[in-house]
Image (cartoon, rainbow, N blue to C red; front, side, top):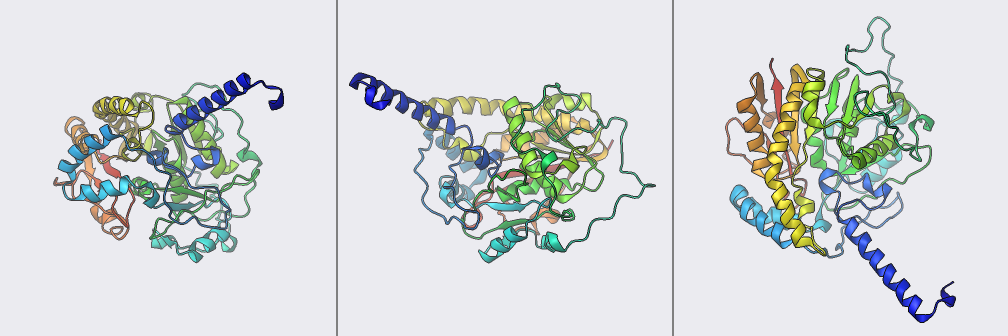
Length: 451
């Protein structure tokens, strides 16, 4: 066909291909690269350049990333704001954020499939367990968990929805079906009894990249790559057997998967309002959880601000990983129109605390008396973190802030850099990325509803 083109037509074809390439580069600034690469980036990292594809038996050492332009208007704003808010911690945090090639990644194992080979490879390559108490026997040596006693059925609620598949909408959401994924959980058999609930995450002291899990038809993916700090809100949530749990802003689904590693809830409602991100969430769940959880895990697409009215007092635990100004990705709002896009984002940033406050109030109304809400973001911004929590505490009666220092900060200070927030009692924990501990940014706060 190319031989039949005259020179003018060939020039036009080359020009169109070049424009198509430019469009793809622009799109990559706001999306993940490929369906199988998307799972390995948490909400806060979905625009970071990914490593080259490699076999599942190898690791990818740290290497210089393809240079990506930094958005100067964003960086100048961060320098001014975080220089004041973080003081001496900001220069080192700034250096980490500007060097994606030096970022570390955690490998969260999936207890619903055989992870014995993956675990051996990780340990052989120098990965260590983030949580020492999770060094459990491999799947092949575990007995089948005893069945639930007929006289003690799992907890139910008058408002519990009828069983649905992990990719079907929650009953309160529109009923349009989700597009069929190449991997349907109903066709994926378990290789054996799953591990008992226990979160297993492996990290490396150096910025070593472990390859993303390959997609294999009919098999669940054995692990999920993520920023290890994104597990802290899940640990703070403390999900127990039989809990009814709401993940209010769930996409892309890493924290929902982590919840299912920690316990067997009676219900996990994963909500995501944006249709595109909801589809991404559903496909993530299909890739990691078995059909046996189809009556436990549901996907909803409601506006998170209405849950406090539509499902008041329904849940035992609510996780609100709120929309925020994404520090890691916003720094790289470059390319054609990058400075203008950065200016638009800074205007949006000023409006985010209002939305976050509304979502947190809704989450507290959706949880039952005695239940807890964990609020988290992936930004260092005080106005989106401490000030949102403080505003809600001052305007919502019957709620109580819970301290996380002894429960999380002290046991995990070997791996994360927690910074004092200058408030007594502390309004939450803030993880600041530093050299050798590049996890974060991550803010989390836990609030208990008293009545």
